[in-house]
Structures are given as structure tokens and as C-alpha cells.
Image (cartoon, rainbow, N blue to C red; front, side):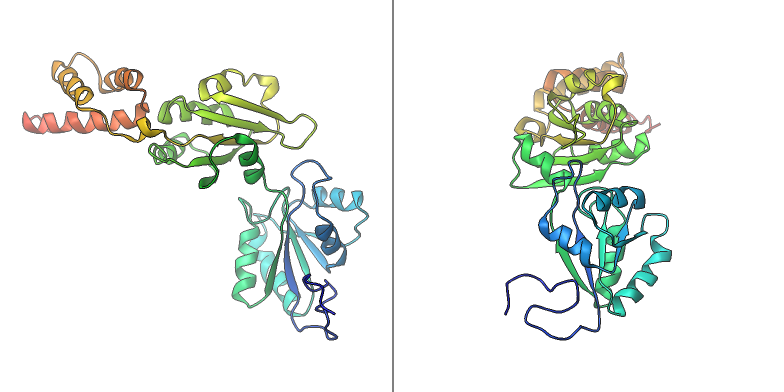
Length: 308
């Protein structure tokens, strides 16, 4: 008799009597901090599969020990994914069931799990989601920002130049934006946000669902100032307000005329002009800097001075 649930991990579908030829890959969400944040279905799947492929074996064994799960755990991470994937696919094709888990949260979200899922799907393997916690949705739920539409960026680039370039693409982005950051880069990232996007409102969530969970709200400048050394620990999820109406508009004619006048006077650098207008107009410095640089080049061409 069907129950509306997925097939049991023994391989026998509800109401069925025979083992299918191919196993199932279960993408299992696990707690992002508090071990109580796991579903009954996730526990059942982890206990019943033939093997658990884990991003961090030690971490997952700790979770399994907590819940009395004795299933074999094998490593599947960024470093060995290409070598291990064919073996795991063979296991699935031979009829074994496999659970894929990440360090915390939902596999495939900013981790190597997507590689196995895509290969399994390409081979015709049945892939099932066992939904549960995810830092991105948890942070959005407490942010108080609009969530009907949002943009998730995972981790921004490590290198400052590439990180700033990625942020520049958000200058006119109206959607709430979420990204993760490591403790050793969070101050540099927030400084870049200030420089490129201005002093927007944001929510910073640290150590979500854990004992020392902390949620900070306010403009980027205030949160950046409050990041003292003793508070730069753990995992960070950053939720950034989208560009407001003013931030999405082009510079007004009066501001453009002032920019052109300052450029002609040639007493201030392009950077100084951009900083001055950024403060006056409340718009991101980087965006105004690009406009200012383009105007300077236009003036140089008109005067026959070249671009250099």
C-alpha cells in the first residue's frame, strides 16, 4: 500500500516487491550548527543507505555517532571528486543507495556535491532531495529584507581586484543579495562593499544556530567597526540590501556638470572628484569613478590630448 513517501532505502518502492537495478543518490541536508536541526527522513535515509559520501568525514562521523548511525562514511570533497565520482557512480549503477552530505546544510550549495549530482543525473541515476537547513535561506528568513526575489553569490572571489569587480556588478542590483565569507576575509570584504556599493544596510549572521550565534543589523560602516578581533570567528553569512531607487538612478545633470567643471579645472584627481560626488550624491564611489573616467577621456579626445 502506497504511503506517499519515497521508496525505502532498501530499494523496494512503496507497494513494490523487487529491487530496482540502479540505486538512488540521496542529497541529504544536515544541520548547519545545532544538531537538532535534522529531519526524521534524513535520519532514516542516513541509516538505511549503503554508504554516505561526506565532504568532511570526521564531521559527518560525529553527526552519525550522535544519532547512532553506523553507515559507512567515505570522503567526497573538492580535492578527490573527479577521482571518486566514477567509483560512486558504479556503486549506484550496481544497485547501492548513496547519501551525499556536505559539512553543513544542503549539498550542492557552494560545495563540490553538484559535481556528483550532475554526473549521476547524466548517467540516468535516480537523484532525490532530502531537504533541510541551508544557511542562505536561514539568513534571509531573519534579515527583514525583501525575499520574494534574491541573489545568492556563494563566496566572493578571494583576490581583491576580482572581488571588487564582482561587487561592481551589483551597483544597480535591486534584489537582496546573500553571500558567505570566511573569518579571515570578512573585514576586507566589507571594506570593499563600502568602497564599491556605499554604506548600505545589511545583516551579518555569525555562527548561525550555534551556541555563540550573533546577528548584527545596520549600515556596513557600523558592522565593520564592530568587527573586533574577538568577533571575527566562525562562519559568516552576509545579507545585503538591494540598491534603492536613488542608487539605481544615473547621476543628475547638475552633478554631471559639476564633474565636468572639476575635470576642466584639473586641480583634483579623478579619484578625488569621484569621492566628493559620491559623498554628495550618496552613490557608490566606484560607479561614479567610472563615469568620471569616461568623461575625462572624452574631454581629452576633444582637446586632442589622447587618453593616456
